[in-house]
Amino acid sequence: MNSDFGERRRPSRLVIALLAASSLLLVAAVTLIIVLMTDDGDASTPVPTPSATATPSASATPSATPTATASAEPTLPPSPIRSFESSTTEVNCTAGGSIPLTFTWDTAGTTVSFGIGTEAADAEPYETGLPAVGTITVDYQCGQPAGWQQYSIAVFLGSEIVARDTILVSE
Image 1: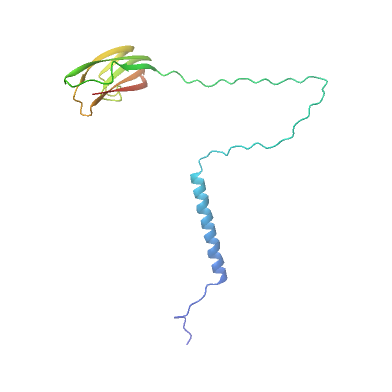
Image 2: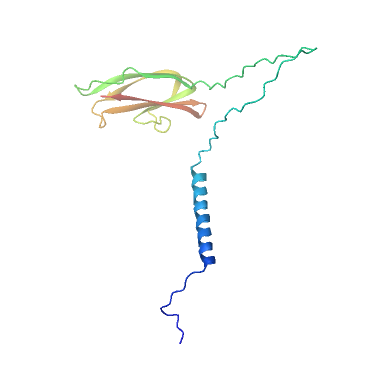
């Protein structure tokens, strides 16, 4: 009686060759995916290659000499906020209470919103419809939980917000 139980068959050379080839293809595919995913898209720096130099020869007609033309650098538009300042950015709260602060701004907008305790004076304004160039005086309330307070402006051009700025005043 011929039984295969307990006998071991050796894989054929063809099976071994197919396994080796598929393993190599898998490694190549994984390597290609890694290279493509980590490529930052920067082209390599070009390297100059030697070229033949033309020898000047006499010519009956003069040729025009090329002149360099300057290309204009693109200029960014000026910031809508020319300045936003506070009378101080540090207050002495040893006596407690409140301390008056004066804020001034100069903008290229049409109106300004002023905010206290927010970075978005347009969303949480203390005052709205202020002039594009203006001043406001408010009281700093000593004893802020964080030890500071933020004051902000939002600049409007018509109904569109064109810029924001924030000043921190600390105790």
